[in-house]
Structure formats: C-alpha cells, structure tokens
Amino acid sequence: MKSYREELWFEVKTRRDYINITPKVEAALERSGIREGLCLVNAMHITSSVYINDDESGLIQDYDDFLEDLAPNEPHSRYRHNRTGEDNGDAHIKRQFMGREVVVAVTDGRLDFGTWERIFYAEFDGRRRKRVLIKIIGE
Image (cartoon, rainbow, N blue to C red; front, side, top):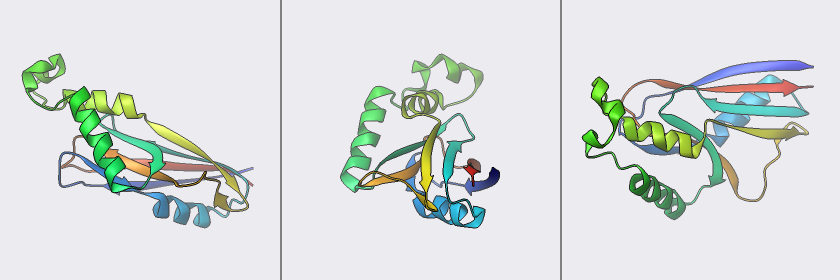
C-alpha cells in the first residue's frame, strides 16, 4: 500500500466562491501513481468546504442563494462568534452544512465518479490564503 499527499492553495478574491477542483485532483492522482484505492480531499480551514456535485452554473448559484438564506452574512451582530472581532460567523455555519471533505474511489488510475460528479472547493470567507489536502492511498 502506498500513500501520496499534496496540498492545493487558494486565495479567493471575493468573500464566497465555488471552484471546480476536479482537474487538480486528477493531476495529483496521476502524480501519485496509484491505480486502485481511495482519494480523500478536504478543506483545511473552518470557513471553507469540499463537496461533490454537478458543475452547472444555475445549481452553483442555487447553492449560494440557499446558503445565504440559511446563514446570511449580515447583520454581523446576528452571530455570537462575531463578538470576538470576527465577521465570519455565517461562514462557519455554511461550512458545517456543506461539509469538510469527500472520498472518491480510485479505479484503474481514475477517480470513479458517478455521472456529472465533480469535486468543488467552496469558499465562504475568502480574501486570504487557505489550503485543501489531497491524500491518496492504495496500490
């Protein structure tokens, strides 16, 4: 059994964004040389997320609208967390809802996706550097 580790770094210029990172994960898988196993991809920051879904602009906007309705950024006074001097209480809740990580099977050297599935990095409190971990194990 082998393992491979790689980090992706992001510095999103806006507060929120959704980035299809599938090509970057596929490139890491190729570099790993692993043909059969599992690929973990997880956000290494508490105000961002990694998830799997369809890469369709309407759906991405629907997610963003839903999350903003669920946990609106303003008013900042709505969140006790923001009393610490932060303004990202909403981002923590959005991350909790969307999740921290995904695991994808690796079969014959490829990510074993269902139809239309893609891996996304979701940023809910951008404007600073954050990272995503890729950990691949297998043979």
